[in-house]
Image (tube, rainbow, N blue to C red; front, side, top):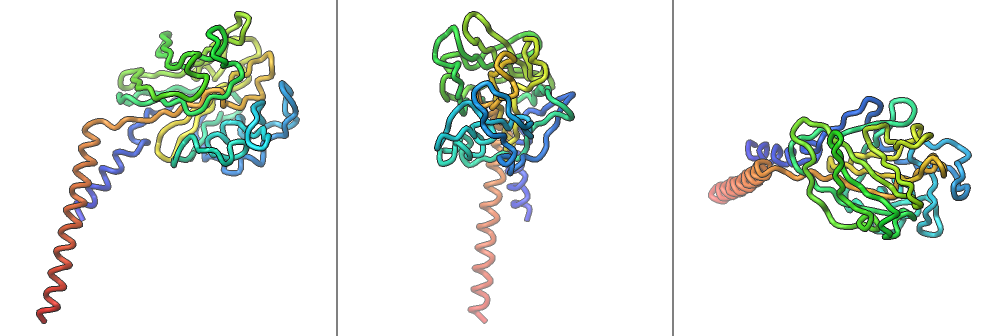
Length: 288
């Protein structure tokens, strides 16, 4: 029994929920991901037109983007669950799935930051679908993280044009807080910066009532985060949060990997001992 317990403990230590950085928020919390969210998606009204009904959850709006079969069901929920306009396409999460969504405790917006566990993590750009991101350096999206007033880009305008590679990041020391930001240049010299810790808003007048980041926790313990570039001039209530979609994946520490190896070795030893014991029992029956 002891080897099994060792192996189980090692497996548990490797789960993402143990290694992932924690979330801090004055205005929001996690709740179960609504598997039937698609039933509340408002009908598509047309570009820059507010839905006739309020969406729930807040990120569940029809999208200006067009997917499979001409579907406008392209918001972040469909991206992560491989449904709607993404039906039949390879899942951006692979075999992983969404278990929880981060929502405001009351009305939008819901601010959030991360608290470092002292362990580096990978950021992977899973999906990018913004008409602003054309590869033009003067127009598009920069995604990165910030600690205090220091902003560090991870993906530049050229990167957020389409899904790209995985980046190793370690933004803050153990126990320190950090968040993520996006700077969007809409063209004509107008740029706006949005942060997760400032109510998910930018600085433009009218932006304070809407979220720009949607956060989800996955079955693996990793986080998935979507961003929407819609601003107050074009109707922020239309946010589909699929302009930049990233996954934050914790990297096990060497000690944790060693614990897993020890557990697996113990499990193998237990299986071998069990096989020998079974063989002895068979032999004893034959002798009788």
